[in-house]
Amino acid sequence: MKTLVIATTNPGKVKEISRLLAGLSLNILSLADFPAIPQVEETGSTFTENAIIKARHAAKYTGEMSLADDSGLEVDALDGKPGIQSSRFAGPGATDAQRNKLLLSLLKDTPDEKRTARFHCVVAIASPSGETQIFDGVCEGLITREPRGAHGFGYDPVFFVPEYGKTMAELPPEVKNEISHRAKAVKASLCFGSFFGAEADSR
Ligand code: IMP
Image 1: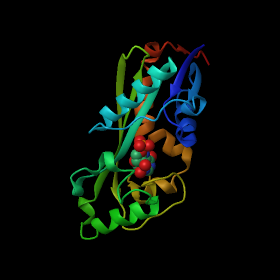
Image 2: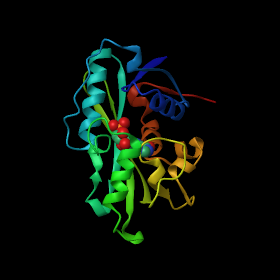
Image 3: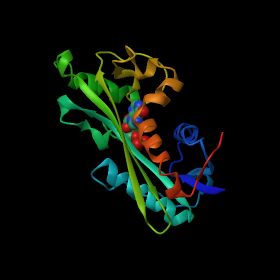
Image 4: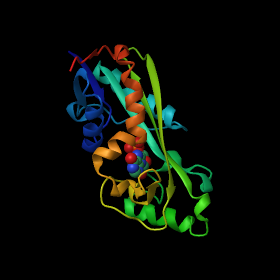
């Protein structure tokens, strides 16, 4: 069975991505299985550049095919911000609640029809020799006026999904895992299973 390293130590992300890859016969590991690997700096200026940096770094140090994702929230009324700064928006050490509060305050005078936004995810899969494939996923929505819901993480409580009439944080995790930007990008990568040497599971 081929091995695929998910280039993150975030257990939530590993779980979410592993579930999406369950149809392929793969031995899935994560960076938590390789504690000696040095941390990589995300020096790219786009999601794509950062995903490639992380996937190549993990593939080089583990000697295994590696998958990395980079994602964030793009708000149209803020010219695409916070974008690649999504996790650092509101400064280092800020909490999700503080980032959401800042976002809502920046949009306090923005009318409903202009509160369009999307979660965007780029997945990169790299081989130890540096060959790389990239896959994109987006999930469109609107920024609410107040946080709602307790599931998920990050900007989920302020991200309204019109098709469901709920914020991402009000949707059960199984639903989020079907419709999210990450789900779409990882699912797009499934048809390239042969790239990372996985056999499609016959189940
Ligand atoms: P990263 O791809 O793990 O670096 O995520 C970047 C940041 O984007 C996260 O820290 C969150 O603030 C935000 N983000 C990415 N994906 C999601 C999501 O599914 N829900 C809510 N926020 C997200």
